[in-house]
Image (cartoon, rainbow, N blue to C red; front, side, top):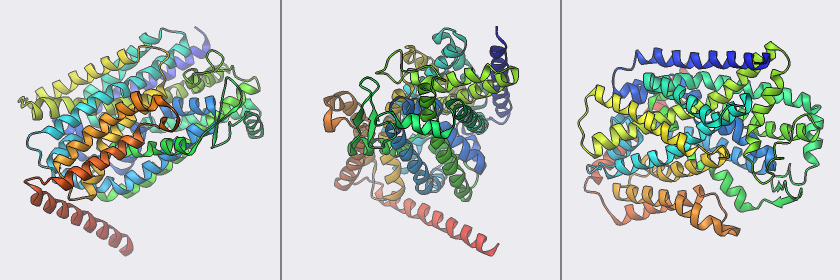
Length: 531
């Protein structure tokens, strides 16, 4: 084993050990189901902000986005990044405080449970549909994380891809099953810091290897359409392909997904004080802006390294697929590790950053999936009575089951991290996004409308992706935008033509929550002015 591999292994082992220790420590404060799923609503503003964004910025931050930019230029990656930045800020601004107050008012610890209680769905139809969609879309989302881990270790140590996936899954499940939500949130906070350091180190090293920023710009500029927000570079013809308005709109609409992401919305629900969410919003928005900018720039730098001969061509194996390009950060890390033991330890820190980006999302998804099965489906929908201990045991068994299914889905080493994430992202955005927004801002919405919207939005994701989008042309749009619109329309139309028996009670509660939120904001402003 080489000196560089030894250094990388030492750094990775230290990092993984730290994650398991955090999970073990958090388990001491996990005494009941509420603690396991929501951390007892005890998160501080910084942990809330950074754990939300780390759980959001999965392996596509360090692998998917740079790989996409490397492969085709800044259009796809850039418009996606701009949508994510806008979506992050707007979600914190319009959703966070109202959702925090509403879930506390309705005594809800999961997203489906909130919608059930918000709309007085005594038959648990909303709850069952929401929990079912969480499982359907979180399994492939989790699979994307395992796929990233498999590619990582396969590229680094030439080990079997499937073996690397299984080992990674065991580590993630290990600390999640011990400490639950609090363990996931605290490790996510640590992981967000490691991810940031990893991006900066790789970017600086890449710029130097490419010959400086001027060389990066001139090399990337020599590729037709590469630096154009209205075109993409075609690696087969070496010409520019048009990138029209519909492409821009649909990729920008990635931002809509934030309003329906259970693993992000749970952080809003778990903060200890709703008035601290403003600080969380600022921290989260700045971090996302900087991280995504660096991720896109890293792809451009990597392509310049290829053109100048400092880096092997990641498209050489298959110029029509971006899958190989997603290993860019891994390849650069290997280059860093060749400069002695200290450099190898630094490379190991970068690899830990890639693991962090993967694990911070996978752990949150596993927690949300576990809550969907144990709390929402078994106990609420099917009426199975479980003790506190039985509910936690069931949740832990669910974690293991979802992880196993994720490994199966990602078994193919050629699977694309970006493509897997994009499908699951669209699913959550279309199923929960419209329901969450209208539940917080339109008191006329009712349970019949929400049921229709969730089913219509989720179904449209599948229909558009597999039936409509393959027709090409103007129909080749990312499925989130049309599915989100269908979900909104379904909720509004069905709510207008129906009326729930409990509507008067629901609207009165809505007014109470909004009034309380407004008073909180006024009191907070008065406190700052007095200070």
